[in-house]
Amino acid sequence: MPKLSIIIVNWNSTAYLLKCIESIYKYTCENEFEIIVVDNASPDDDVELVKHQFRDVVLIESPENLGFARANNLGFRASSGDYVVFLNPDTILINSAFDLVLHQVHSLPNVGVVGCTLFNEDRTVQTSAIQTFPTVLNQLLDVDFIRNRFPACPLWNIAPLLKSGNEPSQVEVISGACLLLKREVFAQVGQFSEDYFMYAEDVDLCYKVVKANFVNYYVPHAQIIHFGGKSSVKSRAVLMKWQSILHYLAKHQGHFYQLVFRMAMAVLRLSVLSLLWLVSRKSRKESIQGTLLKWWLILKTMVAHFERAESAKTFTAQGAKGQ
Image (tube, rainbow, N blue to C red; front, side):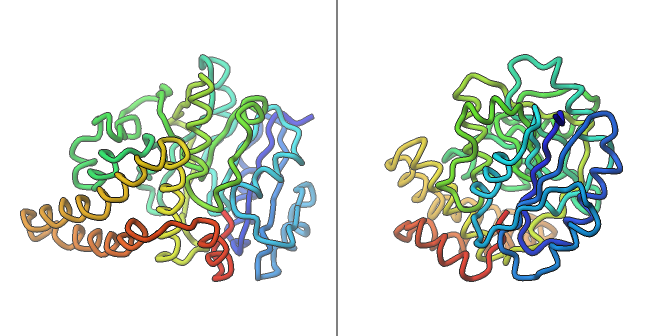
């Protein structure tokens, strides 16, 4: 029986997927592992290349796009490892990340979800690797300029990403691009919640793990490049992300809190960004202006009647990615 099951959900990302699998074989040497790929009915047929290039990989071809949560749960049911990793196909290991994490987890008390350092393609640190649970206040002030100036602020606490050393840090949320946990913990909390089609299912999982009295950790010396969003259409992906966050808030904080959140994001967030744009130096105005334009797009999500199931169906038909 393998110690580690690596589950990858693919949608139209085979070129990245092949490089991802290659990096796993290159850098995972100390622990026996299996790789399970769940293809979410990719319109390109080249996922068959996985069978030809990596005969040991288990390939599950779904006849429909199940979305991220359902597809990962399907892969989990086909797995047998003591630990499971849920990994995006647009990632590559750049060191023995999984061996390092598995070595570390034995010394971590009450371990839940474990994550690693995610880098952008240019090797800058991806600050979304760790997050806090979304609230009105932290999302209202979630502007790069503010976060970078006060990284240790408990509203977002990205300080563990910036400190030196290899000591693990306790965090709230691990990015779904790469998260590892014990098989028994994942089963105990009910796996991924399948009421999400895409986005926020990682936040939901981390919340369930914390509510079950486990602790989530960030392990800095395990390192992966996450290219990010290579198979999604950006504007639709932004809307789907925020629809999923609204669903998460209604589910765990109640519909009234979700309503307050929508009002705050629709009105106050745009006001804060507009004020920042007015008082900022010329060199910062372009960055803030781009954020303002994105939030005008999000505005209709915040004020519109939220019908998640219908949105997921429409999004799938338009060719959304399945991870």
